[in-house]
Length: 310
Image (cartoon, rainbow, N blue to C red; front, side, top):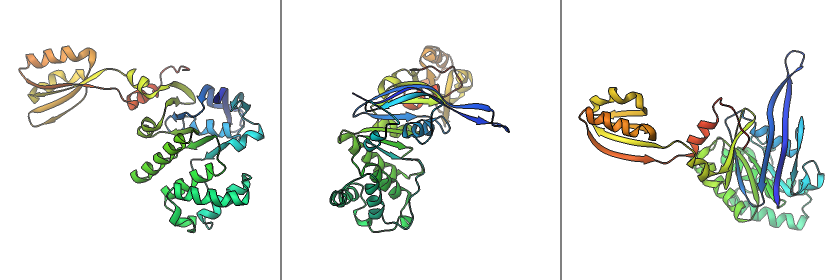
């Protein structure tokens, strides 16, 4: 069964002095996410990631299109019990403790009183906040707030968890903690849909990713498959820095350390580069193929080229 089906959702906002000029924030988006999948929604700031999440949550209404969550229309009130959500910049009451905040959200979600106590204790332990349950949120670090934010998103044991930029603004330790939490949600069998522009996190966590830019879907697939679509490159290291000027036009990047030069060349130009280096009487040290990265795919598909639905 599909956990999420996005069926041509679009969103435009009226701009201009008279608010009569529509500006598209999201162009027709078609996506399907399977149950139990960890799905990364990638894009630079302003790409349409948060707009998509707000549409799915019912916070804003689409200009056109629709979506289904767990087989139900996404505006069906009954489906709200099956989803959890952490916005990019959540606001929590500063003078509540973590335990009080989770109890508040558990009550809103209809969790029975006896069950609330058990779940709150379990989630504080799971998120590494067992010793901070009585501390006021105004004393929490950014990483601690993100962890309690994820705890509130799953306090009612939803089937699908939506996270908007959950690693944004965190230090390396905080990012690692949030990654471990997301992995634990996957182990629980939950569907996780999260937006991010931090590609290393998506590469480590996601079964599949989609790349969106300027409101248009640019590509979608398994991370390894997308990486394999990037251009072949090789790193060439040689002794004889004097030759760099003769081959610079073939290199996408280069640097020199003493008499040793290093350059990155496209696969189609490798033979020509090696021939020129031979003519310049350099000594070849190494030729190393470079595997494509998710960053390469991301950069290639967030330029102002013609967008395609994937």
